[in-house]
Length: 97
Image (cartoon, rainbow, N blue to C red; front, side):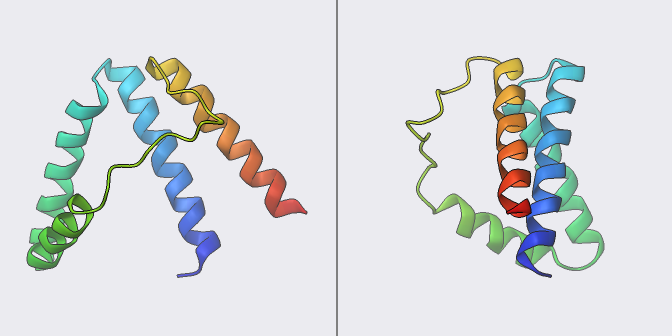
């Protein structure tokens, strides 16, 4: 899988997650728990559960992401969605040059 395909999938996942938070009025942590549970189940069903758990451990050992000073920390989901749109537009413009 190439970088552009990964970027496109990640952008779709980001948009879906924010939309689900807004539609369900669930906080990101609640939605994260649901998504992680479903991903765990999916990986268990295809016998990748051990590798998935190792991936989760690897990710959890990474330093917490810090916000870029260029972008203010979102205070609610509407602001987060607006920020995501800004990234999507910027990335699309960068790819076209």
